[in-house]
Length: 601
Image (tube, rainbow, N blue to C red; front, side, top):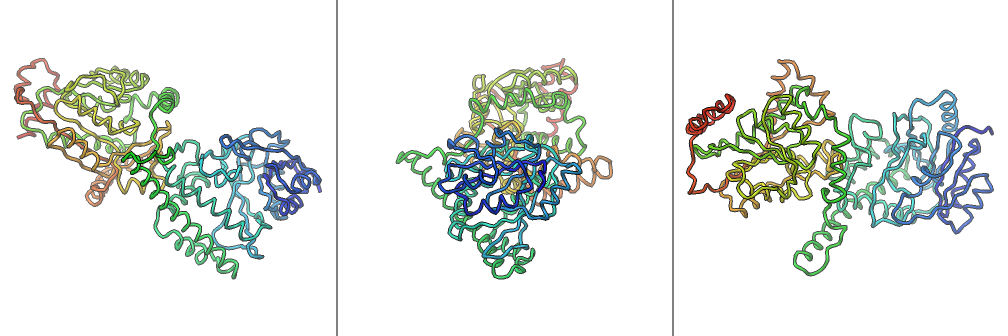
């Protein structure tokens, strides 16, 4: 058999019963590597006898697992690598397809290969198709790193996906998965897999996902599969749904008795995952109650994970220093699709509308506004153009520099400072109003930011932040929204009930909380540009307001206004008096004051 220019990687541990068949199917490949975890049977002897390179691997419980370690350290002779498990075999059809692909030159960085599972003596050709990223350019391929400290039984990657830099294709011919172990090993292995899945969806749901495949419906095949899995995990009745899809819709019944038993076991696997999720939540809640009553310590793994302290905060700042487009930050929303500009202004205007609706008559005498987490100045510009005297504060000095450039370029006045929103560097009652838009979710404790805003506000605070809502949680599960941003920070969404408790605890007597359905992401801009023309934009506005009339009260965008009790020693001054006392006011400020005076009547 000729030596095809391809390398092969096989991770093993006590695989004597399986490895011989795997190596027999690879006689055509001349660069085969077996990475072994100190097998106690004849696995390594068998591999050496077949001419494979054998490397020992010891996992320390923290660093990269076996496959990622091999991708980073082994001197593969060829650029293309085939990754197999010891219980997998390359079929003759797949071998010929790979040879033809390498002869003509691959046009992708990785290829998905379907594998047929041999179960109870029968090769399963139908049902839910099983794919794996098995043929890749090894220099641009790494497995996801998803640490789950509780699952340490295997030193090899479990269900982490192999990520490649470049386009992904598919091969037609299948692999054959034929395990010599009995059903006891099948149950044992899937019990560990279900532990891993359940922990990911509960205790580690707020993990940093920056190194994982992004679930996107219109992305690569790998991203689309991750999105479909996210959708599947979001719906109720997963076991029954999986059995109906795989056994009936995908023809699993054509595989006879073996197909029926296999699909029942896979459906039961998803039942295991769901039941273990429930158990983990019960245990973590009980641990949290014991901690709150001082009965016992709270396990670190049971503590919800946020981002924003120490090294994590520095990582955020580094991202905003190095990875953002400074020109876009300075100019946005200019250049955005018309509907996106409308949605941005809607969120900002909605908060002010709520403020003015609740305002006592004549309560806009001195409109000093602190914009918390001001970023590159978008919100500061919005408020300054409506006559407010604005002070903007942000933790990032680079963001403040961009905000200063925005002020200079577009001709508005704003005082800009570097500071921490969780420890505002101002005395109590320093500003008439304190405003924030999509800024608190960057903090390690968003509610501490709310308390700080209440402290420095003399009259009212205005919040326009993501809401912890059912639709939001559904969007996260579907991959339309994320729990982590590109900067690595956890997206802290505000719970309206908890927010109301904070207002009440601060002595606030008058507040209002509203929610709307507002969604846009950079990847949606191409879709929104369809509505740039005047007729399509009017259609968009009609659809948007109709949707909010139906489901807005459960929406993802929260607006809240809290008015502090007015001081008896400082009677309100009417906007007209303010205009008389300030003859040199800018025209925009005069207009804003006059408009508010009319609105308050």
